[in-house]
Length: 90
Image (cartoon, rainbow, N blue to C red; front, top):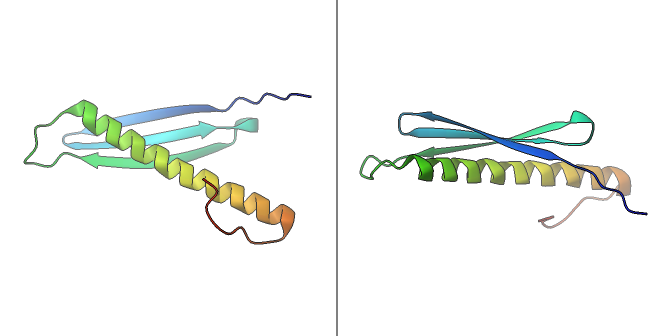
C-alpha cells in the first residue's frame, strides 16, 4: 500500500533597508504549522544586492525550520520508544 501526503512550504521575505528577514512556513498534515526564521544584513562595505540578501535570509530560515522539524521528530520518536534519541537525525 502506498500513501501520499503533501506538505506545503512558503517563504515570506521582508526587506527593510539593508536588513532582510525571512519566515519559512511549513504546513503539514491537518494544517499543523511550523515556522523557521532567518535574517541577513548587508555589510556597509559591500554593494547592496537584494537578491543575495533574499537568498541568505531564506536559506537561514529553511535551516532553522530543518532544526525545528528534526527536534519535533526526535520528541515523537522518544514518545514512541521511551528512549532518548542520540545523534543527528539529518
